[in-house]
Image: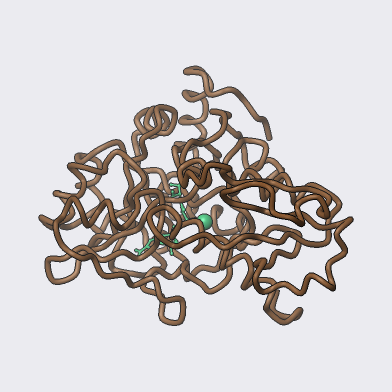
Length: 330
Ligand code: TXA
Ligand code: MG
């Protein structure tokens, strides 16, 4: 496994590997993806194996534009075309009726396929040179932290991937917003890089959500996910008398100077000014950093679930939920 800078030559080699059925990690504007030829069922199977991802959780396909999208979708509804005109390329994934060319393993047997046009020059060039839709989940092990940097990919998937293209830190830092269409209306299946409010403002109506983890329409929307290797809990659910401060970190958001900041061994603030874009780009980065420290616990502030705050709270809540699971279910 090599980490290589995302030069034209290296992207060309990565595209060649994809055409040969190999696995490549590459940067997108949201998180790093673990890519393979999305039309090759054996290559897709190796993604599931590398991530230890359950077969019921479908992959999304990355394309360069509407033309490639038409190869893998049997139909693109009007409401989706409208949304695409504003948000694609970008951090939105559309769940659409699939065409026959998409292998069942990619969609976990579903009649729909998730499709995204990433807004990242390396990702776009890679797909263009590969000449096929690129299946790519986030380049992490199942249930672990998503990667926003090439070295995060190496930490988890060392030995499982044939090449890592290094394009530096991703800018958005949380995964794409997943949407679908029902009865002519857009429905959100996962909160992500484009906030619900922005979609609603553009469409002019209230968008409903189906992000319920009890009956997920998007099978990856489990109750727990994205867990750092160190226990994480919300501040307001933590008994401060039982914290071993010398081995605990605070993950904060907004104003500085909480009176107990000095007690924690480490303090990271997602955004001192309360800027949600800054906070989302720092979220996985800080969790990866803290995971590398000799700590027992991370105590996280809750963030108001509005705008990008929804996507951030979704990830934090799932990480916290993971540590509420009984030991034999982790
Ligand atoms: O930003 C992103 O979306 C990143 C980058 C690499 O593009 N990718 C990503 O992929 O987050 P992944 O596999 O980690 O999450 C994709 C989610 C999964 O939760 C999956 O269940 C859902 O998309 N999904 C994929 N295909 C679907 C389908 N046909 N119907 C419903 N949900 C689907
Ligand atoms: Mg993921």
